[in-house]
Image 1 (cartoon, rainbow, N blue to C red):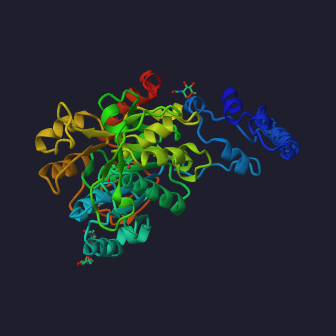
Image 2 (cartoon, rainbow, N blue to C red):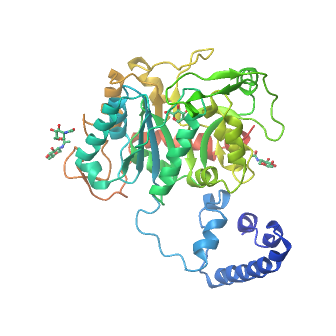
Image 3 (cartoon, rainbow, N blue to C red):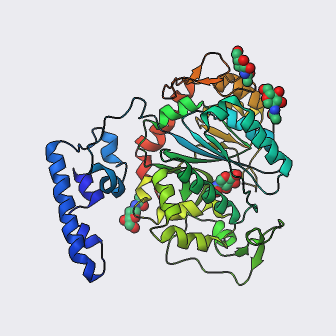
Length: 428
Ligand SMILES: *[C@@H]1O[C@H](CO)[C@@H](O)[C@H](O)[C@H]1NC(C)=O
Ligand SMILES: *[C@@H]1O[C@H](CO)[C@@H](O)[C@H](O)[C@H]1NC(C)=O
Ligand SMILES: *[C@@H]1O[C@H](CO)[C@@H](O)[C@H](O)[C@H]1NC(C)=O
Ligand SMILES: *[C@@H]1O[C@H](CO)[C@@H](O)[C@H](O)[C@H]1NC(C)=O
């Protein structure tokens, strides 16, 4: 009960909405009506507080659900399989990434999910045509219809704000395309999964839907001098040809209106948080987007800084990026390219994704065989597969058959979500 009061803040609604005076009476009256309705609904048992402990510790949906839907109708019993979440993937590629992107799509395919593919402006038009043709020609993808392409390709300058713009663009399209995905996941064509989607969906079905997975810290270290103070301009924003970012002088001071955070550019974002970033009813995501326009490597800081400076979301961030990435010590600009000799370490890390891989490297075949049980040219098998082993048809998309990958993910959830680590490592 306590959390309902805190989250919905019924008693304080009239005070929270500081509106012009002429609105305050109607607002007060409607708040009163809403309050009475909710209390009645509770008494009649129409609204029940969520029964699981998780739901109490981590409230799921916010204000929106109560005002828009819950009041008018009693919640219908959920359809079978409704507790299985849906993921929304962005897979981005650049020139010569077509085949890696396609392979990754097959490896992470699940009919419950939604996918958006982006080949940036630097990839040849022929590749985009080929990608569209492959999609149209693929009977499974064409039948389910959950794979989309960003047709107006974006210019992306490595390190520049155009990267974040592209991620936000994909988020916006995904919000528009589908009302029922739960998490957004950002991948590049040089990533690859280490678990099946059945493993991942099963693991995520045990996690509160409002959690965001984002590695982050406020200890900027060398990034203070080399990232936060220099100012860059990304010509990708206004020129048709691609060129590197350039530096503007003088340098700027660290911000005092908000606190900077930095971390990994790989993340899993809740739908609620994506809506917060895209819809912009709070000005924070917009202001920070403007600030980060002149920031080098903004994908490593934008979302971290938004979430940790937001009262509404700062308690939902899990300090983990779900990727196995092998850096040099000290880290260089690019991580190690992973090969067969990294295989054991990768799997032992329990991470669901790894990067980065060379196109069709032998280790990808090993992952296909040992972790995904995927045969060449087919989607990774799962409980949804019908008929034959190549998964050319969809049976029950809500049926999950988790395997050993799930056991590893369960350890991740224990370590990062259920342990004390969770709160102790939040926005520090
Ligand atoms: C479409 O699929 C068929 C058979 O699966 C294949 O022979 C053909 O080359 C494909 N066409 C394209 C454009 O990929
Ligand atoms: C999203 O994915 C791309 C890979 O194409 C990556 O480089 C980028 O930094 C990611 N993160 C964000 C926040 O855009
Ligand atoms: C979230 O922000 C509030 C207000 O700044 C702060 O009191 C709280 O400690 C923050 N929580 C986390 C986990 O950072
Ligand atoms: C999958 O198997 C079916 C039946 O065995 C076959 O007709 C189809 O061509 C196969 N598809 C692929 C992509 O191998």
